[in-house]
Image 1 (cartoon, helix red, strand yellow):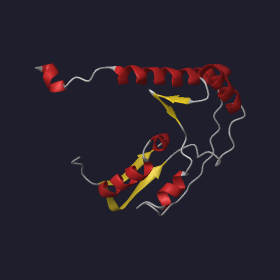
Image 2: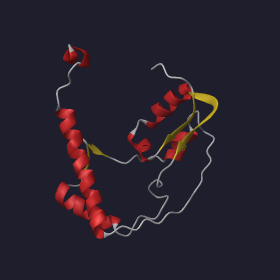
Image 3: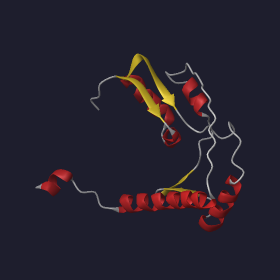
Length: 141
């Protein structure tokens, strides 16, 4: 890609979906020498105490969808290695961590709705991935 240099790249919860090592190597070519990568997330597993209702959601999801966590047309396994460890061996090995607390209060309907949104998103991904790809230039012609 022919991109201009960047001073800062910020990612949220998407970082765990990527090939993190390769992403950081690619960013090293794009980010200016004094630039940075910022990861903003709710925390890695083990960093924070899980919500008390999370196990109930996991049990229901497993009961109806099976033990494999679906992600698009595939399954998802959370990375076993922490983001900090991946960053430590990357060109962005100087790590500063900031913490902030935020309480999110959700109703039961909101928690259930969130699970439905995950299911809907996975279904949309499966449909889109199953569509035949059309060369856009040919389609316009």
